[in-house]
Length: 298
Image (cartoon, rainbow, N blue to C red):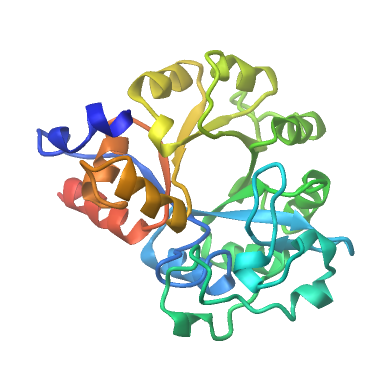
């Protein structure tokens, strides 16, 4: 168990003078504003995040929306706990999606209930335009089927190729992005950044699997992100990211699995920092930013 061996007993030791970790707001800044909303992404920007992560679905009318929803990675986008209807966001067009209201009962929306006033499921284009104004980097998770080509076309239309990356648990989508856009920069690196997401089950040859499809990043679930795996990723010239579960899952983990640390507190974040991971995609970016400021203060 990760935190049984690399947890709180190590966090009070000597720290380096500076820590170089990029802070990514998971679905925005979910404890400040509702997840995957324009208000939530603005909160992440205002906190000083280096990037934010979002989830994308292609609706039946061709619109791309930013939404997570219930369900598994094989059957995502369900609206039950989020909006109180027993269907998927994929069953709707955007005119119908605009009428949906996010529910205070949803455990993935831990911010104050008054923050739900005026919150809605946005179009990806609206979010990207907001990001372009600020210059923040956007990590686009291709959550739903058929998202690769329209996402690529939209990012290119907005001239944001160097400000966005594309990732998925479905590695065929990652491979498709690379097949569609194999361009490289003068230094030999890929211009279009792609990331392979892994959940609990990380195969022994995970780095080679990602190399084979031209991925540039590997995104590991926080409690599978070990120093050994991070070193293996970096040794192949790939970038690493640790992603945290949503608020509901993290609350469960911290209460039942990893009792030597709190729920995304300094001790938990320090465990991940100690692995050498490059990017941390977190639900509490303000906590991580303050921790990094403490160590990087000159």
